Length: 481
Ligand code: B12
Ligand code: SF4
View 1 (cartoon, rainbow, N blue to C red):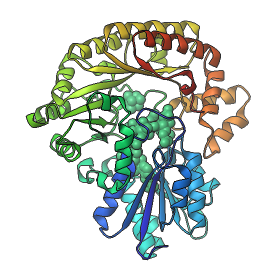
View 2 (cartoon, helix red, strand yellow; view 1 turned 30 degrees about the vertical axis):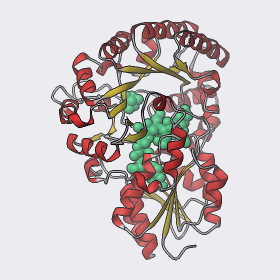
View 3 (tube, rainbow, N blue to C red; view 1 turned 60 degrees about the vertical axis):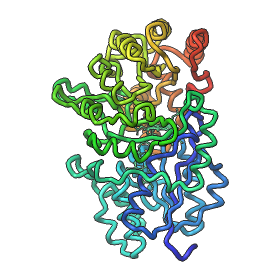
C-alpha cells in the first residue's frame, strides 16, 4: 500500500461491445472522483475503464486503500473478480451503480469480499464512507444515507436512502472533471478515430447528464407511469439549470474542433407539465459562438417530438435523437405502458427530418405476448420509419427483464404460476442471474414466439436496413449472453 490514502474507481468491461464502448468515458465514476477531489484535494485517485483497459491489467494494478466498482447487470462477473483480488490485497471494497442499487442486500449476503454497497447517487455516500475509513470511525457509517454495509460483527446494515426532497441538487454536484482520467484520455481519443462521428468531422465525443429521472413518470396531468421494462433507479426528476448546462458544455467542448456531447438523460426533451419550459430556456441560453462547434446526441420520446420542441432541439444543436420505438404493434406498446402511439412514431421521424435532425431507431423484441404477427408489424413499421425519416442507425435487442422493472416482477409471477416457484425464488434472492438466461426465460414464459423466429424477423429487418445503407446490429447482439 502507498503512504498516501488512495482510492481506485473501476467501471468494468460488460461483454457486448457497443459503438461507444471504449470511446465514451464513464461519467459516473468521473463524477464520483471529482466530488471526492473537491472535498479532499490530496486524495490519490485512479480511474479504470474496463472498456479500454483489459481486465487483467486492472487486476494487476489494484493497490488502493479503497476500491470502488460501478456495476451494471452486464459487468457484475468482472466486478466480482476485481473485488476478490482487491480484498485479497487488503482494500475496502465498495460497489455502486444501477445493478448495485437494486441488489445491494443480496450482494452483501452472498459476496463476503464486498464491504459496502451504495444505492442511487454515490457522491455523498462514497465521500462519507471514505471519511469513516480514513478516520477509522466506523460508527459514522450508521448515519450514511444510501449505504448498505457489513458491520464489525458481520451483520448487514441497510441504511435508509435519501428521500426525493433530500437528494442533491444536480447544480451543486461539481461538473465531472475529465482530466482525472489522466493517461486514459489518450486511449479514448485513439479509439474515437474509428468511430462514425469522427468520420463526420467530430474531434471529441463526451457525455453529460443534464437530468436524472424521467419526465414521463412525473407528468402531472397524465400520470403515464413507468415503461414496464424500465429499471431507472432515480426518484423524481432533477435537472441542471440552463446556465449550468451551458457552463458544463463549455468546460467539455473542443474549441479547436467539433464536439459531440451525448446527454445521457432519459429523456432530454420531456416536460412534466404545460408550463415546464426547461427545453425552451436551454434553447434560449445557447450562445452563437458554440454554433457549429457543439452538437448533441440525446434520448427522446416519440410523443415529445412536436414541431415546437424540435425547433428548440435545433436551436440547442441537437444532431441525433435516440428514440425507443420498440415495436410496430400498438397493443404491444400498450402492454409495456409505452405511452406513445405508432402515429407519434411516424410523426416524430418526419418532424425531425424536416429540421435536419437524424433519428436512431431502437427496437425491443419479445414484448409481452409477442408473436409472428407483431414481429411482422414491427418489420413493416420500421420500413415506414426508414422511408419517412432520416435514420442514423437501428439497434434491436430482446427485452431484458431487469431487476427493479415491472417486467421482472411479471416474469417472477408467471414462473410461480407455472409451478416454477423455486426458480422465481432463486432469481429474487440471488445477487446476479445471467442476463442472457433471464432473457431466454422471458421469451419462453412471456411471449408466443421463440428465439429462432425472433432471429428470422431480425434478419429481415437487417436486410431492409442494409438495403438503405443503414447500420444495424447483427443477431449475435440480440441477447446479452
Ligand atoms: C452511457 C451508458 C452506457 C455507455 C457506458 C459507457 C460510458 N463510458 O458511459 C455504453 C453505451 C457503452 C453502455 C453500455 C451498456 N449499458 Co448502459 N447506460 C448508459 C446510460 C445511458 C448512462 C450512464 C451514465 O453515464 N449515467 C450518468 C452517471 C452520472 O450516473 P451513474 O453511472 O448511474 O452513476 C451514479 C450512481 O449510479 C452511482 N454509482 C455508479 N457507480 C458507482 C460506483 C461506486 C463505487 C459508488 C459508490 C457509486 C456509484 O454514483 C454515480 C454518481 O451519482 C445508462 C442510463 C442512464 N441514463 O443512466 C445506461 C445503463 C447504465 N446501461 C445499461 C445497460 C443494460 C448497458 C449494457 C448491458 C447494454 C448492452 N446491451 O450491452 C452495456 C453494459 C456495459 C458495461 N460495461 O456494463 C442499463 C443498466 C441496467 C442494469 N440494472 O444493469 C442502464 C441503466 C440503462 C437501462 N436500460 O436501464 N451504457
Ligand atoms: S424507459 Fe420509459 S419510464 Fe424509463 S426513463 Fe425511459 S420513458 Fe421513462
